Image (cartoon, rainbow, N blue to C red):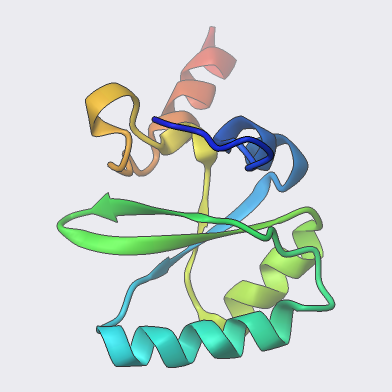
Length: 113
């Protein structure tokens, strides 16, 4: 992946905005209108200036990142979506894939030890 000077990296986003919400992408026109509504509603909240997208079961999901867990909960209540754990994101050539629940299963296995 190529980074531009001054651009936020994925790891910076995960550290500074760890509370993330995945929202299923819509068709082009509806997505544009929803994104405008999200930007307007989130301008006074701890919303990251940059997000990313992942694929789960053939559908694209836009991931919105927040510094405050209350803002992430508000976003889910307002726009829908699901909590997203950054550790569930694919790596290497499959970096766009969402392996939903992978991190939670790994944490549960560690607690059982």
